[in-house]
Each structure stands twice: as C-alpha cells, then as structure tokens.
Amino acid sequence: MTEHHLAQLNVGITRHPLDDPRMHGFTSMLDTLNEVADNAPGFVWRLVEDGGNDATAIRTPLGDDVLVNMSVWESREALWDYVYRSGHLDMLRRRSEWFELPKTPFQVLWWVPAGHIPSVEEAVQRLELLREKGPSPSAFGFRDSYLPEGAASAS
Image (cartoon, rainbow, N blue to C red; front, side, top):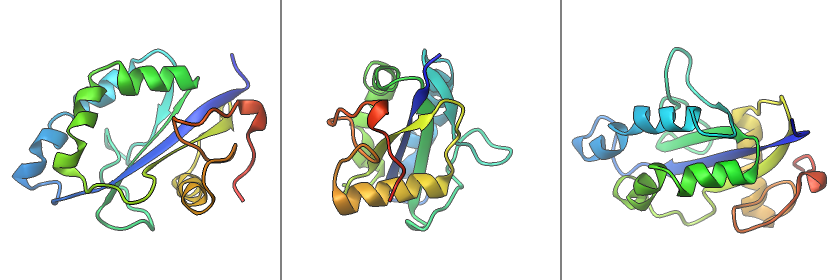
C-alpha cells in the first residue's frame, strides 16, 4: 500500500437543468460510469450524496449550476486509465453537449495521505488555488507531474 493517494475534483457548469431532456445523455450514463469507476483497478473512493449513488445534488460555493465529481485513486495511472481508457472517455468527448466550455481550470489533482477522504471544501480550495496560482505540488492537472513527496497543504 502506498503512503499517498491521488484526489481529484472536476466541475462543470450545466447547460440545462438535470431533468431537462437535453441532459438525458449525461444523466442516463451516470450509474454505469459510477459502477465502472467503483470497480476500476486503483479506485479508492468517490463523492456521493447522502442516500444516493452520485453527487449531482451536492452544491458548492462555485454555483448552483455547477456539478462536482470528486474521487480518490491509488495512483495517477489508475485515475488516467479510468478517465482515458474506459467508457468514461466517450462521455468526456461529449462533455460540451451538457456543460459550458470552461474558461478556467475545471479539474484539480492533489496528493493526500492514504486513508484521507477529502472534503468538498478542501477540493474547492485546491481548485481555487490552481486557478489563482497555477500548477504546484498542492494543486495540479494531468499535464503536470508532481510526485507525492512534493505534496503540500493548500495555502
């Protein structure tokens, strides 16, 4: 077991309310994609609302029309494989059908001690850090290569 795991948050501003028929392509795939994630090698945890199977009802200071997806993985490679080498990639390619084109970073990665489950507040803080200061060992994206040893608290 590793000493650190990789946490991730990604957000999207919805184009339409979730119950709008134009969002059906997204909402109809959530259960399947969540099951794929839950069973993926290296998966540790994902954010779900109380009594639910996803996080679509969770709201943050980022806005009422912002959906959040948050999870923890054993490694960068495990998360990469889920995002880009599973059925998730098809949904990612269709993102613009359901979500506004992002004008600022919409995903943040950061290392956490193994066993730590980050809060939504912690995740939003990491995203804001990335947006304000750019990539660092405390908040980065897939294009950046920071090792767990460089992990630092958000500041």
